[in-house]
Length: 107
Image 1: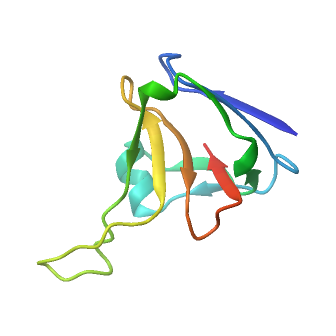
Image 2 (image 1 turned 120 degrees about the horizontal axis):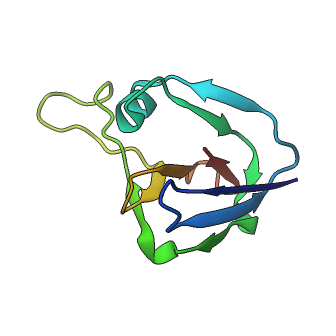
């Protein structure tokens, strides 16, 4: 099934295939709450990373969250998961985690 999305300002558009629109979940982790400024996101857990097509890729930025729960006060490790977002409007677009290289998680 083709999933399509874009940022709020329209500078980034993407398409990705998923076996199904499900499973979707509403993520309420501390990172999603902070980066979204609200109650989290609905996120697809099974899109095929190899099918990702992006228009406006030059307008993407990536955020690797700090894992405060895993570090001491002097050194906080960064997550390997890459949260892609529009550098103009800040809209979250998808999450990619190298630990699951075949999957992409669009918002």
